[in-house]
Amino acid sequence: RRRSFLALAALLTLTGCEGVQGNAGTLAFTTPLHIPPVLDPVAGADGVKRFPLRLQEGRTELLPGKPAATWGINGGHLGPTLRAKRGDRVAMAVTNGLGEAGTLHWHGMRLPAAMDGGPHQMIRPGGTWNPEWTVDQPAASTWYHPHPHGQTARHVYRGLAGMFLVDDDTPVALPSEYGVDDIPLIVQDKKFTSTGQLDEDFGGTFGLLGDQILVNGTYGPFFRPTTSRVRLRVLNGSNAHVYTVGFADDREFHVVASDAGLLAKPVALKRFKISPGERAEVVVAFQPGEQVLLKSFNGDSDIESGDFDLVKFTAAATLRPSPELPSALAALAPLKQASRTRTFRLGGSNINGRNMDMTRIDEVVPAGAHEIWELDNVTYAHNFHIHEVAFRVLDVDGHQPPEHLRGPKDTVYVPGKTKVRLAVEFGHHTDPKTPYMYHCHILKHEDQGMMGQFVIVDPGTENGTPRTLSMPG
Ligand code: C2O
Ligand code: CU
Ligand code: CU
Image 1 (spheres, rainbow, N blue to C red):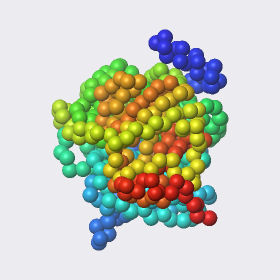
Image 2: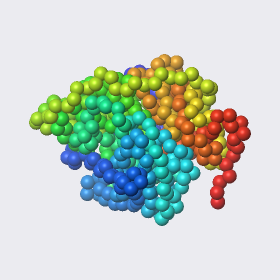
Image 3: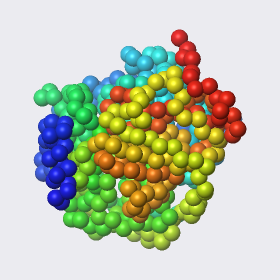
Image 4: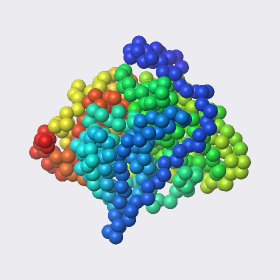
């Protein structure tokens, strides 16, 4: 407690963070939680699953009775839930219906760099981008959002984001009826003007810290469980806010998956921290007829501020029985011997003292490598996301991470003045000319250039790989 108070006091002096107040106790919870519809793909004769996606402008009542200018995918705000199974060939047709260039990145997907939707795969207004890949990774809750260099914060904040669920054939008895007992929760903070428009003031050390929360785009949502257990796929889709998620009555629940897939076994917890870009799947039990709030409690990070109410659960009077929670979930592969260690010093808004340069390749990695990436945060809180890979958190300042962070991940919270070591497993899609990104997922920091580029190349060709890219036009 004392430590967190000191950290907060230090932050207030450091950033002048205007003491954003949480929304706790102010919401009526009269609006049903929006469940993003699953977009059924069009299956061609070739077996490829085709997903048409359109980035578009919209007007959405984010606050009841106050239509706001928003952006969405196949709709006015947020996007549909995409779903594919390991082994599926998927083909996206992403049309940019916005008045400016954008991209769509598949956060958590392991795919060739040219399909990644990072800053090198810009879609001009009116243009359509057609990435295609074979899904080959374990079941996970991934997501998608734009990634245009320098503009990501604004694009995501206006509403461009959605979930992309990967399924596989491994049988696990977890609640899995989408929208019934398997619920996505896209948690995003907003700041509104007096007329209910999105306030786009991204000033301040961390950019925008909102004082209101939308879950799946719904303000003050309730959800009605009809089963004795519900799986919540929590995505922190916020620009900067870190949340400490738990229930108002401090009930215990089980975390079953991290960003990139299932944990070895369910981990009983009352609260967990989640930073922008991270996902956590939890299973929680309800009693018939009860009501309980899911909340974010003020925590000890530099980027939390006050208590927030997220969703009110109002359980039905009778609940269908759910399967017992399995005692084991996934057989996680033992970590392989790392071939080398790379160090990344996280500064205010740079990595190793450098800002993102679209023409510079920062790291060259041989295909299939297992490496240790050491993050040395010398400033205030950041987080770190690596495209294409899955990693495991080895240690935080020399200590084993908490059990729910020992599963497969692609994004990790890095508290201020802390060292985090990751065991990173790289894929096999080689392309010496198209980089993947690694970056802080606090979107203002990313936009400010707290991002670097790596390529995956055939083993043995690292030294001959050019470190500069010539950019087309
Ligand atoms: Cu979620 Cu490089 O992004
Ligand atoms: Cu990503
Ligand atoms: Cu950062």
